[in-house]
Length: 598
Image 1 (cartoon, helix red, strand yellow):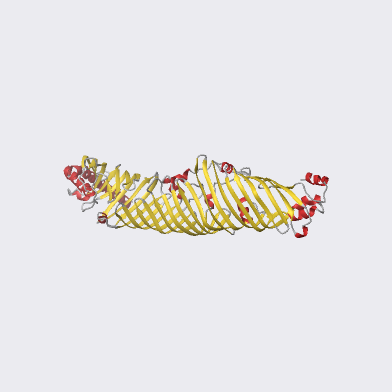
Image 2: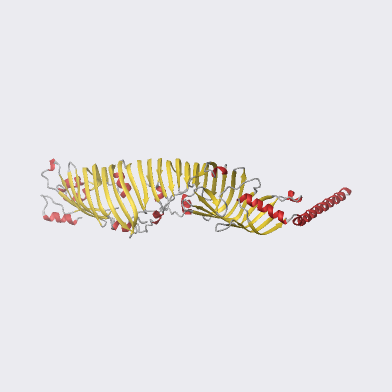
């Protein structure tokens, strides 16, 4: 019991002693502002600001306080005179406490609060407008901080301006070295950055200084390590790394809208970079976008009306399927062309000149081998050219472009595909595998409209198709012709099913206002010959064709059998029906009966 009472008494003594110490400290802090002459405080603050900025400031008001920390609040601070001045608003200077107890005023840090900085990058360096173009430094240099301020970055060379808001930063000098850490909002996105310059004195002599820079926000991480100098503007060279979870979001921050609904997602880039005020060139580049990896060079120029991206890349495999998502040539029912408006306005926001060579390129269900592509955007028109490429087993060359037009979009296609597998090709292009053989296709088309459906109605041009040593599946013309003389009424059934082999299938189409006229279409083999005429409507996706099939084999020279037929209806499921059968052994009544069986 006695020990407990003694413990309580001891605790009370400690508490009373602590209270006395606290009271003494409070008294010291209370009377400290009156023990130090105001002119010494003012002179110390002015000396620190002069060391930091290189110019003596004008101060309208000064307030000294010790709670919650020993500091001086300088109000209405102004640097310079004449037209170019820098008004810092208020500056808070913290004072080292222990030296102050013996009457010495030492400034530990200067904090610019709610200030507005204008930093200009010119041919000979960077400067804070209103302050001398000389680096700060010296033995009396305190730590500089910025709180809740705005920074305008302006390039006198390129004319570009960036605004950083809500800036909080800490600036530190170590000899000739300079470093800073900052947080701010850039284009409305919270961001952080770090910068270290090894030798600031070299910059004033147009010499190079090692530099390290890091930038990070929610969708972008970038780093640069190398050297830079000011020679007719900023000149930097070194290693560059960029990572973004969304290239689409990054481009949107610069006001650039991408022209596709899909893709432009995760980006990773590493390169050797050269940076000037108006351009960035990335060599020894390794880039990965949406899972596609490529190597090469890229350059971005930001002078002129629109940013210009140029480059040459090589890849083993490139899958462009993701860029096709959200866009379809047909409506949801797959039986009519899409009426969704085409928006090509994003193409007017940038220029492009990009070349890509790849071992394999994938577009949806279509794959091309050993492809050399050139993609260009100029004056709002996108052009895609294939110098060479193996598609469906054949060689593709051609150009396709889309650009602005009074009615919406203007489309132009000029292409040739030689020695390709026609079954694979027409299955991918038209979902039809009826035509087999080795084909050659030449296409020249042009049209314009507000959507795909409107463009098909304005198509003009021509198409030529030749297929060698193939067959028409689902049709047996020879069997039907041989059945006519023996069983005329069975000719219709004999026509359907099986295949019609041929040595040559050739067709020439003239296209006007979306209607394709068969100027010349024929099928030739050792046993049959087929001629075809009529019209195919591209807008309506249907056929209205008629033809005649004949036996031409030597063994059938005396046989006058001929099978007229009609091919009508939708592209997806056309109807094949016979016409009036002609044969020397058939009377008129039999011919009429066969006609009625169609």
